[in-house]
Amino acid sequence: MITREHLEQARERAREYFDRAGIVLTQAESAGIEVADFGLGELERTGLEIVTYVNTSRCCAKELVMFPHQTCPEHRHPPVEGRPGKEETFRCRWGEVYLYLPGDPPPSPACTPPPAPEGAYTAFHEVVLRPGEQYTLPPHTLHWFQAGPEGAVVSEFSTTSRDDLDIFTDERIARIPVVEG
Amino acid sequence: MITREHLEQARERAREYFDRAGIVLTQAESAGIEVADFGLGELERTGLEIVTYVNTSRCCAKELVMFPHQTCPEHRHPPVEGRPGKEETFRCRWGEVYLYLPGDPPPSPACTPPPAPEGAYTAFHEVVLRPGEQYTLPPHTLHWFQAGPEGAVVSEFSTTSRDDLDIFTDERIARIPVVEG
Image 1 (tube, helix red, strand yellow):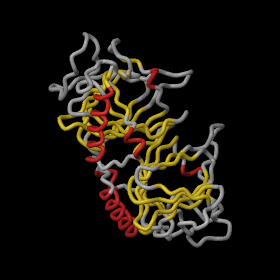
Image 2 (cartoon, rainbow over the protein chains, first blue to last red):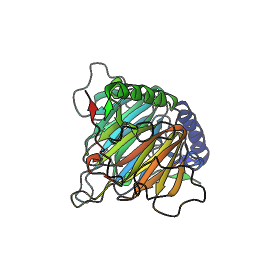
Image 3 (cartoon, rainbow over the protein chains, first blue to last red):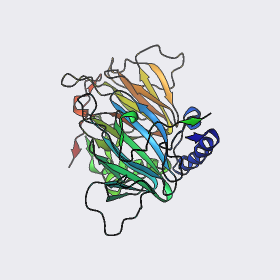
């Protein structure tokens, strides 16, 4: 649940990040920035600000803003109608983002997941992306990511996005946000 | 045919456009910017400078630099192995680009195609894209595009890119460039 006022504040803040990254939006895109709090009501800690440029039956491109230390919680993209799940490439445009995947954790991880029920975060192999750096995630790979101390702007290039089908490790999570009237 | 020296000059010039657009490249991307002269040996007039971020069997993302009035010549993306051809979204990031498609021409077109054999340019419906504006092209649609007077930086989000299969209206054109030793 996110209040209308909090939604507009988050959009305004996201616009500042787009400006810093030199990314130009249309008026309609800017007015409609998607603010995803994943139903947890703790946007500063767990959330994403999103502009979807295109999402057809074949491919998709988005721009993501992350506030400082904001986390997109652990999830995977399952196969859909007999086809492999969503394949994603994350490309950092501004700031830095830490991507966590299954595999060996580093000796000193850069991030801590937000407080969550036991078992809500399981992947701790760390990949850091700074401006110009990118990572392509195979379909169905568990992953979560967190922005560095200044926040981040990240491009996502992918196959079709079906957010409603994403499987989150934290069972409390609802991907499609509910806005309070 | 493009000389090694001309290739490096074009790359250096393309880097200036990426800088102006605020787009950060890795060192490897910057060193390997693709310079396509389409085999015509008139890069200033007919050509593209390209960084391919990702091109898997499912989707693709590229960044294109176009010098002032530089043209990407008319072509289409045919069906491949029983699947529809490449679907492309062009998003202008910097400068302006004029996209030409089948349909009614405007009373005063902004661009003139480069000199070419008769019939090499047939599509004259005009769509102008300024920063933040984009257009999604259905598969197999004839199209060509030309940068405005300052040049342009354009993101391309698409399904898999198979440049070798592109069909150009101008039969002189070879998409895969030949570099002189």
